[in-house]
Amino acid sequence: MSEAYREMWEKLNLDIPAHDGLLAVLGKFYGDIYMSQQNRLKGMEYLDFVLSEVHGLRIKELQDAKAQGRKVVGTFCVFVPEELTLAVDAVQVGLCAGAEAGFDAAEKLVPRNTCALIKSFIGFKLARLCPFTESCDLIVGETTCDGKKKAYEAFAAHAPMYVMEVPQQKNPADRALFRAEVVRYMEKLEELTGRKITAGNLAAAIKTVNAKRRALQRLNRLRAAQPTPISGRDVLLINQVSFYDDPVRFTASIEKLCDELEARVAKAEGVAPEGTPRLMLAGCPMAVPNWKLPYVIESSGAVIVGEESCIGTRNIRDLVADDGTTLDAMIDALVDRYMKIDCATFTPNAERQANILDMAKELSADGVIQYTLMFCQPYANEAIRVGQALADSGLPALAIETDYSMEDVAQLKTRVEAFVEMLK
Image (cartoon, rainbow, N blue to C red; front, side):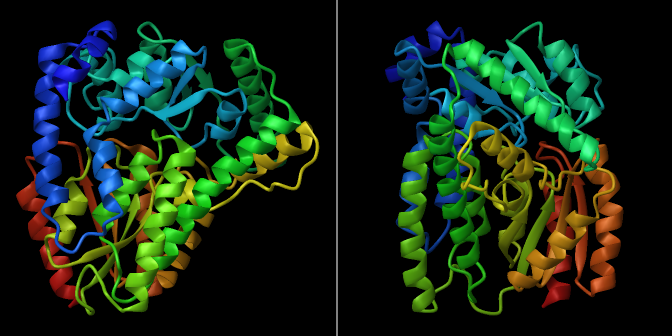
């Protein structure tokens, strides 16, 4: 792949030798974690192809779109409404990174004890490793944690940044604040693209994004079957790809995959034997290629049946009401939907605990593993209260705090294996 796209990467000013090295490492990592799985679905071939071309064909598609006059918008968070981006015929891609790269350079802009996700997206930019970042005409940040807020201040000197304010509570005044921010972002997109958002094009965009969420909801419902028909690793990959693939194409591929899953469920065929401990992940998001913990879990005698995460149900649980006929009504519907997100930035946030318990019940989970990135204060704090809620419900739980390094894999495997053995 590197030779075919080298000229494109050079135009994007990537560090070609370092980028080649990164792709080589990721290719092996992907092979070890994903291609080694037994009994995978045929529909996963599409996702494997997307990952193999993640810095190739998809980047070429972005460059072709830019050549046609379209804009590319990069985001870090599920609070940025993709519906608005699509309404101005722009392309939205996720930029969070899940690997240790460029951390030395990143630590010149943010403190060393900043969470790995923040240091990773800064490091990928400063080390010139991310063609998605280099393709963006606008990068949208959001105020979901103090680490991100301050990081965006430093990052703005290196990229075209725009920051949305996300409220910290869910009172009427907070909703009014977020609505004003949605309108302000809408105006920014109109300025960027020279296109107006109308009731017509916003309605079409809402329909597109709702269809993607419905396909992923269908996928999650099928995972409730016993035995579960798909591995947690594969579903994590699907959710990760959903952030940067073309939404219409992605939705069609997932609906086709779900047809295959339904056939498996009808035959009682599973990716793991019936009786395998069913675990749910809860907590921080896992960006590509942060596959460490799911691999540890599913190589320790368990199967992951759900992810309570931004790269999981937090992103797809709710749809935007599509019965509005005016632009104002549609903006209200957007605001109402996005304010339902149970991010740890909110205080209080008891609804997240309720959602976790409901989800565990729906999926017949035998236990929950809480995943927190080191130095992620919002989720680290909530892990205490979520842990208590799980204990009160009688659901076994394990709390894990880690980063993107591989140094603790043996320790994690020991802890997970002990937890799985307890469930058995």
